[in-house]
Length: 201
Ligand SMILES: [Zn+2]
Image 1: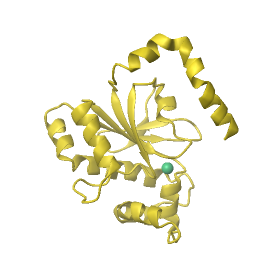
Image 2: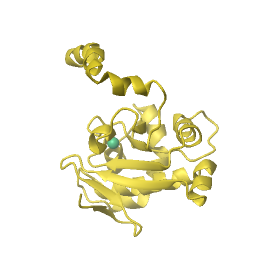
Image 3: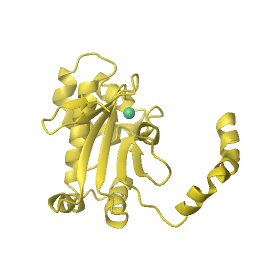
């Protein structure tokens, strides 16, 4: 933590070298995309995309999960999606799953999560949705099939939001599914045929 704290304390001095760019950020944010990714420390959307401050609006949680629309309890996910679309006018949403995901691994192993009631409750809907693929997936710690189907499921959950459906219907929004392989850095993109592929740069 010491090194992180040290760099945080010096950050303002470092950014002073780019003062024009940083000063402009105070005028407002105009991000190109909302990226919904896992909280996993190895998955850094800005690093993967080369984004600069102001480029992407981020939502991160365990398992890159989007609760379906209309849940009665307050949801940071619902608030973030609404704000991204209705206030910031974001026209692209990426759901980015990844290999070696702890959340997907816990679902696959069927671990007893009673000591982690928050995690257990959070992952319960995903567990139900993923049941067929969890049973069929080989014992590969990367669990690519599980993580990729989870991305597809979360894109479906996004479509349950009226604001998302409306903008899709109007052609003002595009949804993207990504699978990030942490041991290679490869980004697999979900195609119209339902398969994830790496595209040449
Ligand atoms: Zn993860």
